[in-house]
Length: 147
Image 1 (cartoon, rainbow, N blue to C red):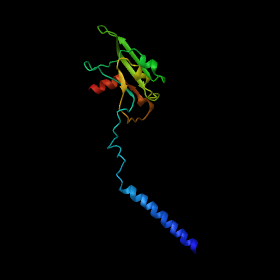
Image 2 (image 1 turned 45 degrees about the horizontal axis):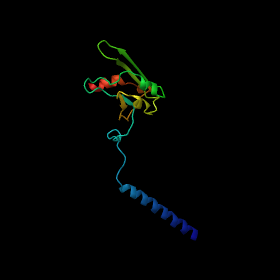
Image 3 (image 1 turned 30 degrees about the vertical axis):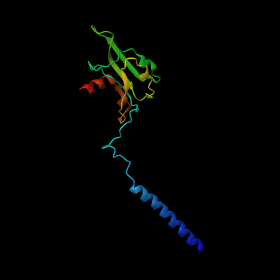
Image 4 (image 1 turned 180 degrees about the horizontal axis):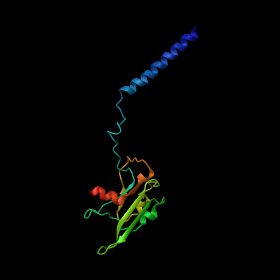
């Protein structure tokens, strides 16, 4: 009979401990965000995908199509193209494609750019239906941002 009361006592004790933990967490402030309606603030050091930096005067990208970012990228996720335009010194950027599915966010491209043409974005909430949704035309994104 003493074993019965021992089990009854230990069961009641474990129930009280469990209810105590539940009550403590019930009165603590909520740390969960209601996702679609609320979003996290990213820290200043957050590194999302790269984006082009526009020139302050013209609004065009600072990129001079030197290709250093493309050469420095270990995952070969950057492809860019430019053309020579009459009356403009150097090449003009025509295409800057980032394949974010293969990007490792190492930052080699940003470090190798001597013209302050690319930086990390603060965009973190990316979702898409297929891999093609993560192949970004950064020049087009910059133009869409201006409008």
